[in-house]
Image (cartoon, rainbow, N blue to C red; front, side, top):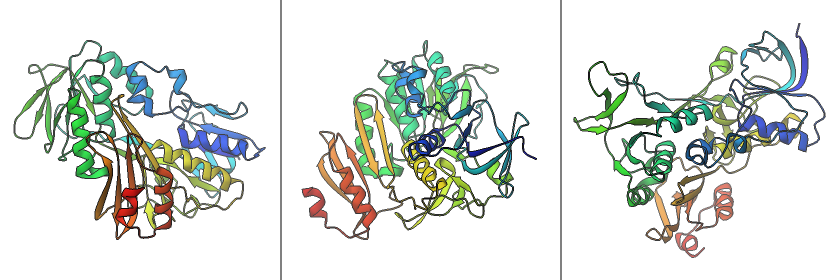
Length: 402
């Protein structure tokens, strides 16, 4: 028998759960809401981890997400067992909670490099505010920073620290930074932005190992690349992807999809589990927008999931049809917005001017818009969302004219 009952149980301390809680109250929910998160802090925005908070321009309090006063929040608390059939959850406090509806939004864990030397001090991974705190302290006396990974984390951290006067190098397997999501054209532009501000970009190479200054040293001193080149490093930041945290879901018998997430339908209902929804990084859902199952890691997407889940907890029966939106900043040098994501594309249509930094790239597949990136405020994001949702073919000349 459960120790108590709540109407809505939100498992996970991130923005998906926080947005779900706020939307429940905004939509008139009167029942009790319990949010359970294992992190030390209540829900907060994660983008500042690589930007303003890392730079010291934002405080911890400024990153926190406001929640209704009557939402109960348990930090430093894990859900140890979840029984979807009985609609109960057992907490790390030993308390058993029965729920009416529940959200599973356990987020993702950093992917760790599997090379020699990863045990050395001075090697950082960023996922939480505490990680950014530790990195900020570590770089105070450092001069040379190596960022491993050419996606959001590696590029954003390099830009943030270079803007503070650090010598930064980004090492990536791809030919260009941000190439995997945005293609070579945008990748070459991103490289140009980084290099223009003193960031070295070393591409097309893998990290072979980390080394200390001498045998037996405890702290990293260099990053050795395949081929033998050694990059001096006082501090290393690894941003090589994330893995959906589905340990609880798997233990609870939920279905795991081919992309590693928890399978859900278009309403974000967990497959085969009445009253249980999924959101955020772990949600592998049947997307009406994309016509396929997708799993997307980004704060704005997680927040949108939270809103849809809250409405469906209250019986709306609504499919999640919001076109995913992303954004990224490279210090105050450049900012991009993106809608999609394009799983693949066969044509890129450029509008505006790459050299000036004000441009849009439309990603087309079979003549239809699959994604659009806007840099420097150029391009119509709302129009791109509408075209992606419609799936209609569009002429390239209409995109450049718009």
